[in-house]
Length: 295
Image 1 (cartoon, one colour):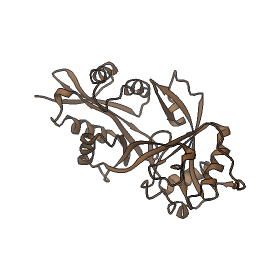
Image 2: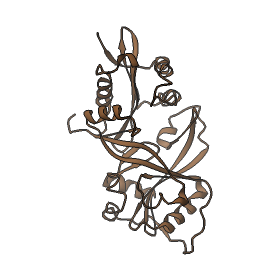
Image 3: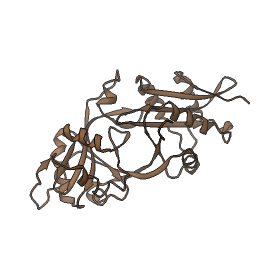
Image 4: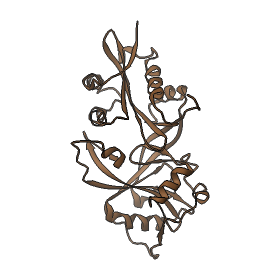
């Protein structure tokens, strides 16, 4: 049996494959409108697997920012599983990306997919945890701390949360690796803020409803999309702690709420966002692939 792996722009075949498996666990129909929207981007690619002209597998990938990429939407037709098609698609996507780091999201219960990703070289780094704040949180008894962007890299990389997340943050939905160069670039743009004991990477983003799911994209993505409603303002906050002080994060969130709905994006085990006040929820596992030089 000949299996052909190739790039594709045939969105109908991808949509058909997802519709055929809509009742299968870990098949998300939100991938259909998401792929349709992101296909407008030059940095976005779709790969499919074909057998006798029939699409039996798909995956998409994106060259993002700060030398980081993303893969997602991997799906293999139920009649063509355990034939190595998933590995072929994953390797094709990875080879097409020019970034040093590549990320993906996967549910922890999806053990079959996780084994495939690990076999390919991905490593699980943290389970996502997030909180949405649309109105000011309760006032604390302490005075609000001063917000500043005067933060040193050597201090930041020693904070609680940095090692726990392997230096990775969600920046406009997709994960990115925080290097010293990225840190300095964000600090110069006032996207790294300190409020008391909290140091946060902050990004002004947009909430886009795709299907029934809300995605948070930053200007890097939205500026290259047409026909989307990007009027919903969202402030993404990735918090790190010199000390896990609830009052300081509350103070920062309350200050930022005037700019839009605040989405705290962190890891399962965050000592502050896990507090009942934030009403946080667990998300998918974030996995990381690091390309070797020359690959």
